[in-house]
Length: 174
Ligand code: SF4
Image (spheres, rainbow, N blue to C red):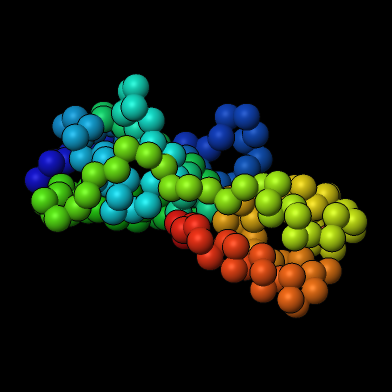
């Protein structure tokens, strides 16, 4: 087992105590840096950093960052969810390490869709029917994986199909 123990801290965002979501930081008993390129492949990392090594994942609207000695997870619903997600992640880290011989390590993040490319499919009327202020903001949300062509009611079916086909070339961790 690579990661045997950790100490966790769960807290609310200091910038706005009104926010209901919580954040989690876990301080690891063992340095897990060597598993990071394998974990990047196994869980489909969104971004990979080399100095110091760290990998970031998107998971159900949360951002998870794993470094050698520390894990940070944001936008968790509550303490129960925080405990569930950290237990899942520790299992994934140890399972990935056990199976590393069959996993190709990766030192780069997944390719992401281009916001300008997405914008080309949109009507660019900024009508706000998608509940975002502009088509550009909508395109940004699509690039993040939070929205798809289905969320713009103004898209012609044919264009929606084209946009969703473009997006199908990228993987979004959910
Ligand atoms: S509903 Fe479509 S056209 Fe309207 S603002 Fe949103 S993305 Fe733009």
